[in-house]
Image 1: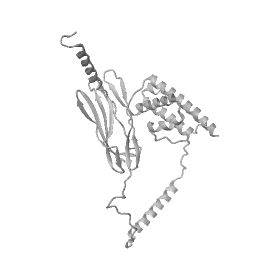
Image 2: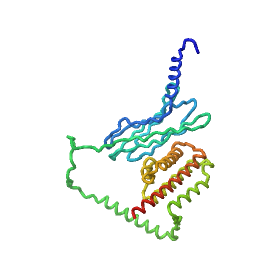
Image 3: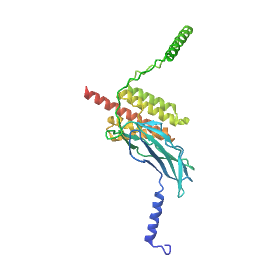
Image 4: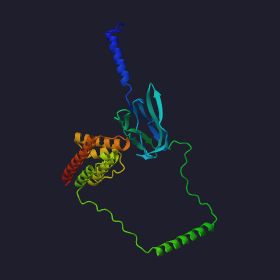
Length: 319
């Protein structure tokens, strides 16, 4: 035992040292400067990834948002700034957002990857979606508000210049069309579309999953394309089998729709895992391993088979 340090004091010192280490855990922090706006107002969304050790780690990618998503429009995207504190770096970005649709709208946050500089190991950081309440404008109590007036007739002098110019333009267009039709001798080639498969939706999806596995895209360095195709196969099955249009849905919006036929908790969690891998590979530049790729295919196939069984049961009960 070191002189001058009591056993209890040493224990407290070790606890403080551990707490100090644990406090530097990387995480995503997202917040609006206010959570409610009226239609047309602007709000600032702050995105932060905190406590990244720049000596050992770096961010290979950042949040990617389209100009419009889920009834929200992004007006301005500031550049990503950094803040160094105690040897750790916090990455910050501000987005200016507005909306012209009243309601409570979600902003899905895709996972962020932190990569170790030495080993190349990647760690995924996830965060829940955040919500913005957009309220309709109430003009009932505004003193300066004036209702729309009736149309007032205003005498206008007739100017034939525009009429003549419009007529001349129409004549020129008609002459050009006639000349083009006369010179067009050969018929346009007929583009034959690929015949739609006559297989049932589940059988077609299983066939596409087997073909996707044979392509071996991850081994060719095309992991992102692999997960894009996996996502497309699942969505095409959902649209065909359940007769729903989910082409523009995010993963957060898709899961509740599919969960209607995934009452089994394990089946629901398995497909949630597939969606997380798809988002990480497509948006966070995360590169899953071979085992994760194989499991994603197997879980996707099991999910579609489970849903097909539930749809059949539901159809039989209705009939």
